[in-house]
Length: 196
Image (tube, rainbow, N blue to C red; front, side, top):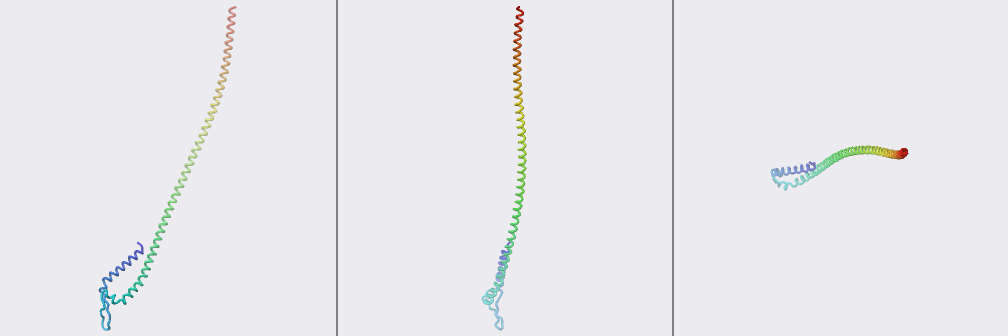
């Protein structure tokens, strides 16, 4: 609860109490005047204010002159205290928000660092995998080239073998033809020698 509200409620309570006290006790009072020999009752109850206005007005004026500045001073002091409390509360709230934001910032920085490390690790892993795959591809290409060269060499060797076989076959055909011709000649020679 603010101090200003407390001062206002306290003032209203004091005024209410004073009004109640006056309402209950003024009918019991009276105003007496001295006529030189004895006291005469001039007024009783609420009429004493009418009969004794000369005393009532300065009394009320003096009370107001003292109480209003005192009330104003109390109210200003309460307002200053309320403002100081509100400033302190705002400072605490601001400090707490700064701490919360700092904590969030630190958390975000940590998450960003972790994400960056994870991304770097992922990049390194993928890069290593790519390099390994490239090396495997180079090895496979080299193997394929070697196999291609072996196939070309084998094809060349086969062609040479075929050519050699064709040459051997030609020689064999030639020998066969030569042998056949020789056999024919011998047969004819034998046939001639038998016919003679």
